[in-house]
Amino acid sequence: MKKRVTAYCRVSTDKDDQLNSLENQERYFKEYIGANPDWEYVPLYVDEGISGTSTRKRMAFNKMIVDAKAGMFDMILTKDVSRFARNLEDTLRYVRELRDIKVGIYFIANNIDTLDRSQSFLLGFLGGIAENESERISQRVKWGQRRSMERGVVFGNRCLGYMVKNGKLEVDPKNAAVVKGIFNAYLHEGKGLAAIGKELEEQGAVTSAGGKRWDATTVKRILTNEKYCGDLKQMKTYTEDFLTQKSKINKGEVDFVMIENNHDAIIDRDTFDKVQLQIRSRGLKEGVRYSNRYAFSGRLSCGHCGASLISRTRLSKDKSRNIHRWQCSQYYKYGPKHKDERGCESEMIRNEILERVFCFALSDIAQDKEAIVDECVELVIGTLGLDSAKDDHAETQKEINGINKQLGRVISLCIKGLISEEELEEQRKTLDRQKSAFGDKLLLLSKNMSMTSEREVLRDRIKERIGEIVCAETFSEDVVKEMLDKIVVYGKDCFEVHVKGCV
Image 1 (cartoon, rainbow, N blue to C red):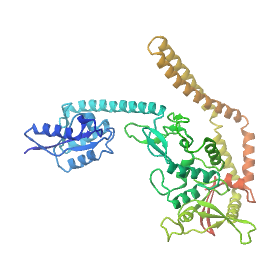
Image 2 (image 1 turned 60 degrees about the horizontal axis):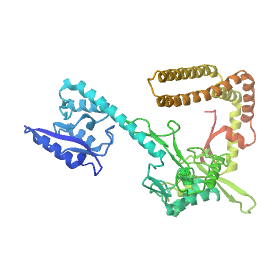
Image 3 (image 1 turned 120 degrees about the vertical axis):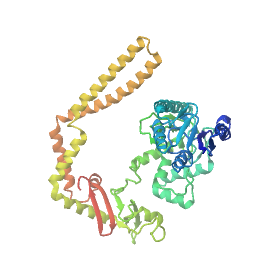
């Protein structure tokens, strides 16, 4: 009985790479299998242009493993270990799984048959080399991409208002008008993010991804994108592990690539800067979707659907005053639930009702004033780190001393000719950055240590201030901002008040 043999390969998507084309790969394996009279050809499995560092996204590879377990063939051919997987863990795991069901893998270039257990060490050795080579390739690619970024080459092809042509940003007049409208509505018309988003949806505007839904986050992302004033900031995300290939938001772990006046601006710099100031003045921090104009802003949520409540005002019937109310954002955008599945059935709630609810909640917990004050004081003291400042100061100084010693060793190596002056300078820059970071930390710890001697005085001041807040008998916006975590609104007579420091 003939042995059923298939093959696995990854082919290039580059039309000029004929050597690794599907046609050539298929011909190669057919001829190789045909040269063995005891073998029967089973159509090969092919992945196109997929990285070998992980098998997670290789659809053909994963189907091959499933088919192997279903008994559709007896052996898999592949050219070498690196073509099968550049991840040593994946390589060994699949080898063991297939060997357990008597399916072998034959690596042609390495002359390794996985059913021969005596070759396990060699397979592990070659798999490790393949993984190491993959890491070097990843580093070279990253280096090349960064050098291109420094020359102003744009990576990515989606930015509303621009088209990317040959790595350069060119203004798209039609969508640039949408961007200008967003900036104008926010800065000059005073509209909020959600309101701007709703208008864009009504106008049928399309996002950079081609969608028609505009939420507050999407609008804010446009308002804070430096590309619109002509600057180019790249490396906003980075790949932490070359094996997983997962992207992470860059929060300073990797240096950004920033080029000012890189391309034609859609928004003049003065307008862009004013918008950034306006964003900060409204209290729009990263990831927060509400305005901080009112005391309850961002602190109210709907008990029916979980969405945030937004501020609404209207004139009284006699037009003598404004009536301030709050409404579920889902209801505001989509109406009642029976008309749209995304809607909500909640009612508007008047601001003065919320004020009375908050004051009542504070008066209720004031019975436990002493316990609350003591807990808050300890929390503040702990947050300042006064108790551990001395130990942290000594540890930080130790780190700085270690960096100084390391710098001395590097200089010594350069004097002895073991490393070049360029390598010395590169390592010196790295060590200087580390030393600067520890120096900033040391300065902060020194300030905290000086505060430790005045701890009791500080404790009394904190206790006095917190006591004033807890015992507030009349409504105060400052007290709301300091004490209120959130209020969940279920209806006009049902609320859930969460006060900071209280369970």
